[in-house]
Image (tube, rainbow, N blue to C red; front, side, top):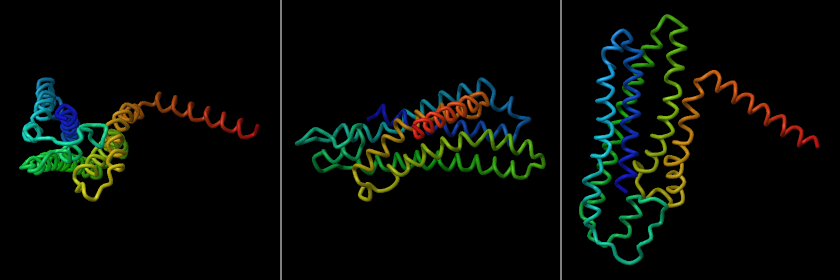
Length: 218
């Protein structure tokens, strides 16, 4: 539970760090080499890992002190807090509240930071008089915005919405999406900025369409 959610939390901070990089590159391009120096980038990476693994210490400690009775099989395929807490014997103490405060705080802080960064980026690009600069800027941020939307959207739907309003099968489907599908799509999404990748993908799609047409005519 601790490792799974700490890695997810680290992903939050890495997406925020990437949003900061885009913000400095587009809003303060002349100061970019000075601000985003190799030394600062190393500190940023270390900070993401450190804060990522510090965020869930309190909830994990409280959950580990609970007593578990009856069936020890959770209704999930990962160590998710809701099915784990449902197996614990009352009283649950402050564990559920601490967990909810931790996930909401970490989620909202990163979401607001990303929104603030990209709000300034989009405002700067809209003010730009150069169409080429504007197009290049939106091309730079579009792929990252897609990744952020997929990851934050599924995690928010999973943990920010109260669990009483969510069916267990829907929770499992959302977990599969943010834990497996989104990381699988990330390399492809980022590679779509590469012209050669776009060309190869276009050839693959056209080849598949031709094969499908041949089969349909047969």
